[in-house]
Length: 285
Image: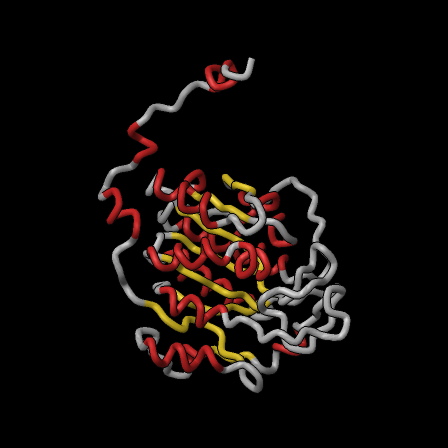
């Protein structure tokens, strides 16, 4: 049965800046959800998303699915709780580069190491934009912000190297300037059985307008014969940045997921009946 992508539209007013790369991520994620439901992979009520603090976080308001707003840097713990509690859910986490690689990096490391069956999409605009321009772990050297008016002097973190080192079984980079590629990439990530990580290069029209800078440099490494099962090759490709910037799947392998090792086929959410809303409210009356 054909699923209209508008089924995932939310009545919430969108307050992102005009031209923000978040719009592109939002659009393709809703398309992916529609395709997942249409193909029978999942029911709409089985899709759950979580997001943190930052401009990206509002995506929880703008998609009509079950969602969970998290504290700054704490996208992963609720994601893990939801998946362990109910293995039938399709869980997707959204984080900004500051949210993921600064406050939340400790959680991210262990989710990758454990191979939680979840998708984690980073809106990487290389700046704390919600608080009007401060450096994040991916801010390039020399970039001037309110927190470093003379320019950042810290070497930026390479998120792909980090996730490869931590054992993520799906490591990829997307680009909001190529919607068709990003859509296909996210669909593959969500269908991957294990921890699927996508660092998405995203422009910020207000504080870091990188769209035209990245467009002539990005290329799809999967169209150039890259072997996604070759760990050493993935590390080498992840080093490329200045003249050519690879996007696509750097690394993808099969490995047993965390939940199965922990619980087998048990679905904890089905082992305990849900209390009535009235009984829960009664505790506070």
